[in-house]
Image 1: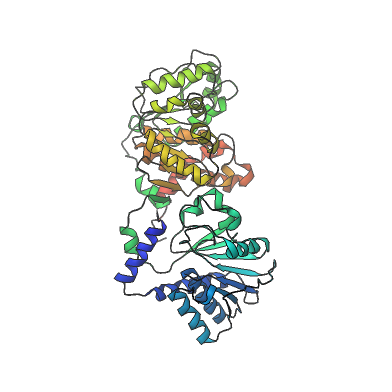
Image 2: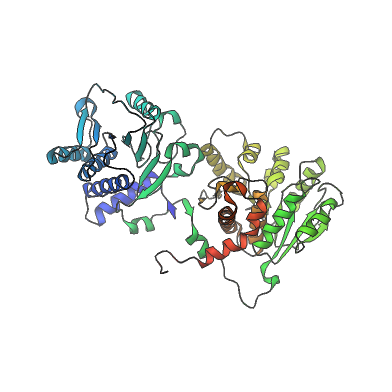
Length: 513
């Protein structure tokens, strides 16, 4: 699914207005109705409801929602901010006048000069319609103070479009203290990029998208650099298997992993690669790993390093379809040398994870030798060791865009919404997964799955999308069986095949049973 910037959404709105012979007021009416329906489906009319409406279109949505809530038996008190008496835009004025003409149960207090802040408590419902996604600057003055008061009130808060104080795209200069802390955010037509950033999870709360009737054709025809990956996208690129195929048709994956005390990482990566369908999987590991890996994953082949305890060198990988390196290899000097030698002689894209990235962080110049369009799979700490400490998830993502372009790499930044960043600036946000996957070895399984899909012939940028989604789905299946606390990485690996089956067999959107 495409995700859109504010400018994209405004463009889609303009096309809707011109091509479908509707007015902005029609769209505001649809939005107000949708907000009222969402609120009325969750709370009772007896709930004390206080609404804050800003002077722009977001305020118009709030006023329209107030009118519709009054029709449903609510008695909302609306504070409309018209500072100086002439700050309302045309649509907001129109909605205010209509609300007065209807003489509904919604009470409107227009704030022109002095504002007496109403007392709010834990039993109150607050609907935040101050500012939507089109806010361009951080809040200051009285609006900043109001937002802080709302956040300190313990009231239940519903925000229209985005929590007020948050910009719809990037929020580099925004202080979270000055953003409404919503329990529920009702996004208008499209989710916003900040919804997928860990920094803002505590402000957005749960989010739900409301259809306000913007043109689907305009959205389909508009290009985007941002995508949310769901079942439909992955199902469309996973290839069904030929009944007459053999293991030779599904590639040969080499996993370079393990060291004394971290052989489990080898086992998990190999299991992930095999469960994801690679035709052959070979582990290159230290000699101490041999009995453990052969006993735990007998389907994997093994080539022994010359060192008993660590990786000290990697033999030629030319005969393999794909190479993944990093899980559990440590950062001993001989291992850093081995990573350097592998990078300098390799020409094909590979997967680099975990300690392979930590080895590169020891010698940052090695970033220049990573083969073009290789996939690196850092979590936040590994990323910051490579590219410098980042203060926020948003800053880290922006840095990833810069690094991906500079080094011509694919960066799969792991997290709740694992995100693929491509050198062309396109960003793919993965929607699958569960907090149950925050368990040791989960990333090792992902390395194996990703290496497996590249070995099977998928381009690295496509393999990264599939692997992240399948990995997340396997975690969801494992969590359904073991609960949020009880999932092991081996459970994720064991469910990779089931995850692929569920994705490929899921009904198409809008289909039948």
